Length: 428
Image 1: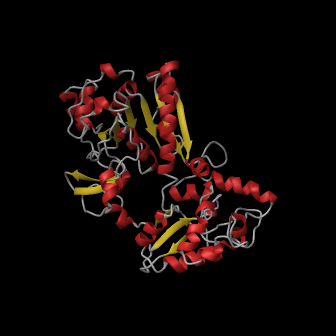
Image 2: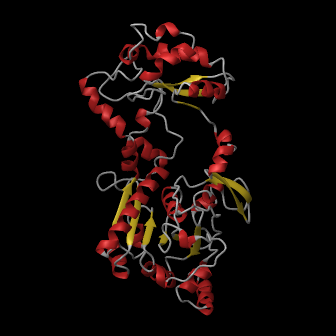
Image 3: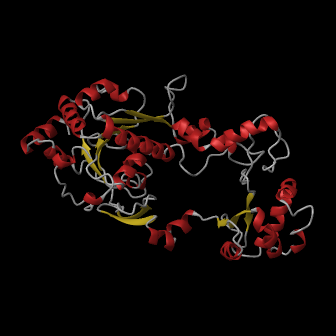
């Protein structure tokens, strides 16, 4: 990419050595993000080979370094699992020298990413217009809770985005309260959307020669992930949703428990063991009904006129899954998985977090990796779900606070004497 030829080779041991062969090699990112939504986006860019420079406040840094600590005095897992493959520089954005360092960084990077509240970067003295003056090729990417309009200045967190994006209203059981999902669709889900926008802007810059703003609102990212519920909201105008197990329908899509709500009915049925995750999720496709009926001990239902066709079973999905559960409760979820897979029945056991973090297959795939950290020792984190044949991902530990300040300032042309003055004045 542009500017790659003029950038110094980085010999820092905390940066992956194979950067020359990565998809985003030569792309430099100034990461002003914190907590989860922004760091999840910049970590993906780092995994793809970008040189991600995390800009943090001196002494404190990203607030998540200290949140939910399990080991006293070291960076929390909250921080380490969202900031791998990055470098850290500390800069006091309230000082004149700090603003000059920031200006120099902006002039040399391709992408700036932030997820502050509305107007924070402007109040630092760097509105979009000023950033464009410094670097016309800059891609300025922002995550906010909400888009322009009446919600714009509301504070947003993961669960608020779920609440206001359609997820909570449609998650849970029919007569139970709205429920959050364990997947971080408001934070990390938004981060993934931002990466798509950043990469599109980076590609468009090849032909236009100029940067642009990229903005993603958490509410809208969640809404985008809830589109099938908006599909069903419109289908409701033509009558009840037959694929849902609910008895009564109003003018809104109801919570439907573990029903798939899609074209193929599904449900989580109990398996032997009695544990909280001793369940297996089963999808009943039309073509698997006959062998499935025989497997669960009811071969007579395969061609019974009240059961044979998918439309025959729609009004008795509860009975159908109860019959399947009578069978599955006699087997472990792994035994049920083996029996169902032999018939090509779509299914999957409910895997708990302990099972996932200890799963040998996920470890072999690099989906769960063990990383060494100089302060906390080894810890496990997720690996990159993106697998590029020519851009393998090597997971490298998160940086210590300000670990690369001197090196990055040297790349900007500052002398050791200047760095000492910056430290004395509190600029870095």
